[in-house]
Image 1: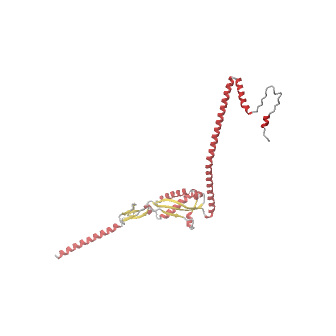
Image 2: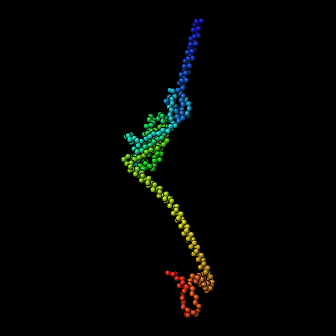
Image 3: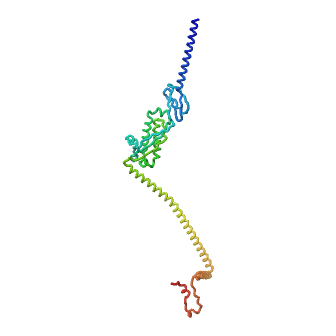
Length: 320
């Protein structure tokens, strides 16, 4: 009986030991599983690696889970933040490194001090985290290389004023190509030129040139505005004169045709009865002429007796 009691106790002990071991294993498993939970906030992505090899990229925000380490691991990358990288500070910094960073040669062999900003964000989380060792340094070197190449293709006037927008766009496009070649995973939002100035030793001369160019553009704009104001008025006056001349020409042609037709009508009547027509023309002409001529009527046979005294003409002479 004593042996049977001892045997039962050993069985109960082993069962308790197994239960405790199972509970401990379950606890350890749960604790290990807990390391696989993580939360993604808006604008974040999780790069999942399985035994060190890229598995997937999670971008859905909220509570997520993957196999706990060391089977799988994660790297959280902010893909929504637009970062800014400043290049140069012409006004406040004069260290050798800053001067080297801002001084660039133009296509016509001039030097400009150029300050610019690169805006970028992470486009591919895995590449930005694991492809390049020093992402920021690579970005800075690439941005300076792209900007120097674009500036080197343009003249100093283009860089200072005329093609700033075009230079920004070309530099951003070239920088994106360089970063894509490195598989950096970065996306260039844009490049903004801040301060663009000639070297201090010739800055005054360049300012005078720029001021002269601005004055020239202003004068050209004023001249174009004056031309746009005067030319329409001159064209209208010219059109009016042309129309007036055309009207005068047409009236004279019609008048001449009317007189010619009247003459031809008289000629036809004259050819029918020359004597009568000649007499009628004479009388009509005298009828038109005589009202404006002073007349003296002399009775036939008295011209040798009475003297001619033009009293009426004397009366019409103006007084002194």
